[in-house]
Image (cartoon, rainbow, N blue to C red; front, top):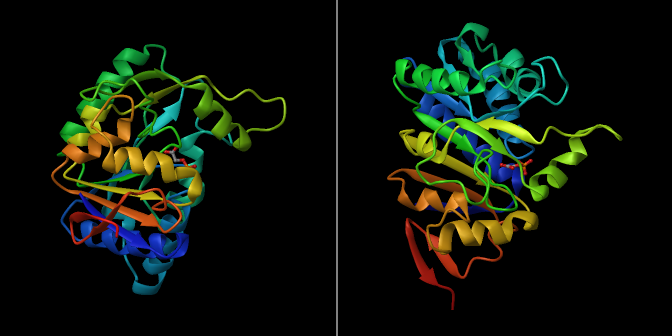
Length: 253
Ligand code: PGA
């Protein structure tokens, strides 16, 4: 794990944009995208850099981590809509190269298997962007998810439902299930880039980075990945017991 601790959210977003751009320089890049509040600053930077430097995002293929079950792609809280609004449309990503898990399929199991196949056909994911839930979830792999899990339907925990309720209107019930890439799927990406910001993530970050590898903290699976890059702001890093620098962890003195 390569852990970088930066001053604040903006610094995390700027550093993340540098790392993503470097990964996109390869031929036919495949980018794994995440939703949530955390990567919004990264997407904003990528769009700005794209405009300044005349970058062409139409060559990239994208795969998103997850989508709610039962929300049509035009629903304001669907992750398909989130991605169009925060990144795809302004960046000029080719809709034909965008892949989202299908939470509306009649046969969800078949749709999950098809999603796995489409990642394979694309040659795998070069760089997967990740957030972390305050309960340690990675994508919608909630605590208890098998470390080898594949794309599947996942029931959401009460913690996740309450964390995400803020995005839904009053009286509007957030979906209780989602389709998510599995931890095993995520672990096959060639590189992982996890971002976390704010004290609300500090305990989950500590458990993920310094705790045991366990299904009870799905983000602890990052410890098993050969190329996991973790960007934290000071607040998200505040519960760490170790000083993480240059790829090593030393006790804080
Ligand atoms: P957030 O969500 O970026 O909105 O905090 C992260 C996550 O739940 O993975």
